[in-house]
View: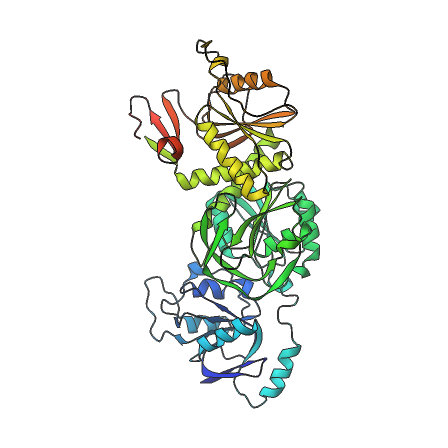
Length: 362
Length: 178
């Protein structure tokens, strides 16, 4: 059936609907990854956003339970040139349209995604609405201009209560800002007894759990909204090793006096080359962020800039100069994406183990 | 022969040691790196290079030949010169070596350093700690702990002298391949 994308600049794209039969509003963003659509769609960092895939055909290998990055995705729409009519894969448990329907997410295919992406690159992120008719398009456009789809979003995607991801050996607290399951998987692979806590948990509450390390997860929205979390990090880093990923990296920066800004159209894809400044090593990374840390605001007495993106020089990694705490803007857990930066989890675990040994021997 | 670290892993371990040195010394003020023997010197230079890229500071690198201070070999009185090359008075010295084993090399290095002056602090950074300590000395920064038996040997290869970067474990009787 016909479906439309109405953009806040007044442009309208007409295409064919698939997935759920609902009308939604969101921030329209694009990703360049060729595969991994299920991981992207279930990534809570896309909450209240409408995701445009630059890869012209998606859905070709269906979906499978193994690839969920969250169980109740809050993404507001999936836009592509074409959705596979006859998907096929030995792991497949459902088709993409079937999956979207069950998840209450609308899809739109058949539009000129190239033109849409070029517009987004030129104008920056725009708000849009997926609608079934364009009769009231003018009022929709007016309404879009007033909205802020990702305001307060973390409170919706963060877990409401703390929950365990049991394991043995090391106790790690993961602060959930919209965490991807892949982060929990990477910790599980490395023998961690993980406890996932809500974004609003205080430093004292975390210390009461007596963990050996704290991981700050990824998440959607503007990091500046997380003032309480930044205070928590400023306190927690004095006591425990900290590793921040994506949103966690931004909050780590804010906690140490740096500031963040909204990028024109963000980094979303998995071919982002990042240089490790110390060693000169280049890794290809999976990225999904619309905000970044302002390098001019980084206090050189407190933080070192450890990674930069090669294409545009964006800060991609920080490390504290006095405490065992570091963060990266990109996703070392990939899902989807390249596994080049996998070693960062090993670094975090080494850090945790060393501190743990020091405490036991003290 | 078993490879414990390939070039990438070694690079990452050195980067981690670099960060830890900065963290432990709250910065790079008064920092001096002293590499021991041959390979420790190359590793020390690499750490200094990373500090240059990260912090934009030139940390002095000294070289130490501890043969005269060893307790298990006869001292060669002809070899007097330590070739330290840096001033260590009131400095934060980080001794860098490739493998930490019995601890006797580091003890010899500390004696050598103390003969040259009075450092503010001395720390030890090694790429590999293979256990079997014979003295109450422990490294501050370790790339990797590799438990070994006395019949095994740990060899660190550095591209400057060995053509490649790697850490290998050699059993007694095996030939160490280049």
